[in-house]
Image (cartoon, rainbow, N blue to C red):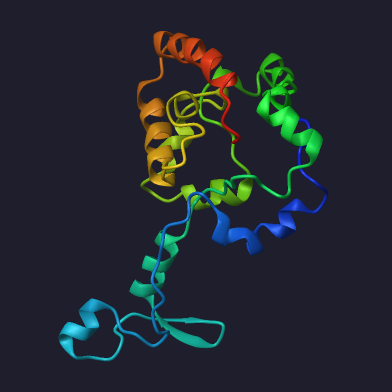
Length: 191
């Protein structure tokens, strides 16, 4: 998908170091690495589902819980990777204009679920969230007109809106979303 570049070169390399600033991150408590899951504790047994990562044994159940607690999307308030010109392009939504070319080519629709970077899309391809990809990719969508720019939006809410759109998309729904998009484009929130 085409867009104007709004971030500095090498911005993707800074992503891992900025995880604590991610708007979608959930607060997690630090647990000792050798802690057992609830099932093993109750049975007074050693780990029944050992997983070996980086030459360390980890309880698979605890590992899955940690992975689920990690945010699926990356969004930062006042993102330091965005250039000065990029801030202007993003706040006026001009950075989206090149995607009109994608629409004319038939790669995407005016309304649909936003295309995701591969590192985010890979996280959503498990059974519970794969339905999100049943809808066409779009320039605007249900998530953008209902929750975009709101600080208290969880990644789960965002996914649920995408899945809801995938289940119910129609010409009428698309027309309502297009009308609501006009309002969302002119919002003052820095997203």
